[in-house]
Length: 98
Image (cartoon, rainbow, N blue to C red; front, side, top):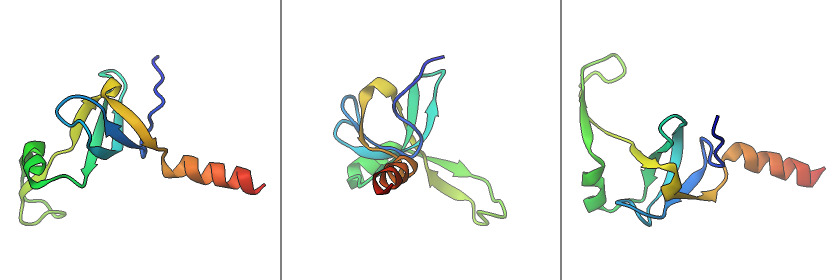
């Protein structure tokens, strides 16, 4: 089994490809496909259009239905870790306090 240093909740930066220079929070790590799913933050309007949208049927959670934005999937070798997830930060702070 392959191990990755990037975990769910980490903030990463895309270092190559279509999303180069953009930051996002890791929603999921797809181990078999070696990809990470990112929730992009601070995108320009042009880049927001490239993210894409999909239609959703009416549900109790979404009574109107309509369009929702998709998350971005990037190969794990194309991202670099910026900030560890909140869990690791809290663990490090408690170790320093002890």
